[in-house]
Length: 390
Ligand SMILES: [Mg+2]
Image (cartoon, rainbow, N blue to C red; front, side, top):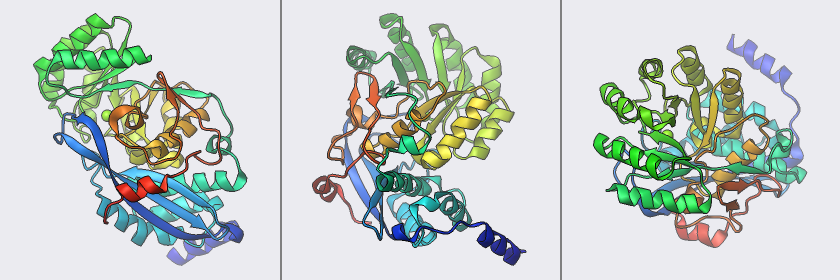
């Protein structure tokens, strides 16, 4: 059976373009300091972001880059060391010797080599798109069919603060910059959460307000909180309860008039289909690293839109490389998108970027890069400075 399958795959495989055969896959682990106090419901305060860049080079002299993160919180078990191991030992052998234009076959080969592991596959698949674009001298959105928009709207994320005045001051800064949608991080102190949502609504009557508990609450806690904050016209309540409790999300969706968003519950396309079948959410947040890069995230968007769900293009805090992946994908997407938190790293949460010319974010809009590939060039001096041992 296995032999028959192997034979069939061999017969189906298109000839690889050997001019551009891939000669190296390098991991670049970075610690990037976070600006200010980065606090959400789980995991305490963080001092830095753990980023893993992947650089893929071809015999023809091109280099593609992709980004992922070792988030290490609910929904992500990856560390920089485990990402390095997965990428170099298990995934790179399915990439080396192939052409960047073998992307579909490489994606399948990586799935055969290592189940799930979407955080490790994402930077490889995105780097292959970057390479294709650089070789053909076109931006990634052209590889995806062309450009449906020139800029992509972002929302502001209001991290957990010690009192409501700090939260309001943070919201005000974003409002002045042009942001019109707030995602309020909740899930540590329900009383504080209620005060925050009430006061933000009072101060910004026209704002779009969403809340995000990062999968930290009990079902009962989520019920009690939603009852209290339901009157404040919320656009969505994001992943209040743990990622495994999809039935619980469905129950919340049935009981409240607040739209429910799934984030940590959706990594793979199968996860999304499960959420849809159970009507557990009507909004889905994607993150290119969580979901396996542009290749897989685009499939999620297609499935979500076909099921009538709203799409919230998010991300962990990332450098311009990870943000550019989202923006390139969004540029080529013809459907609606919510203003999502995909650029929060480069909009103030990270102390440093890693590219020579960061992704341009003006007001609440990220502009679509027009250079070849993802449109990003690494700053070697900064990479050297932020690089850590494996
Ligand atoms: Mg979230």
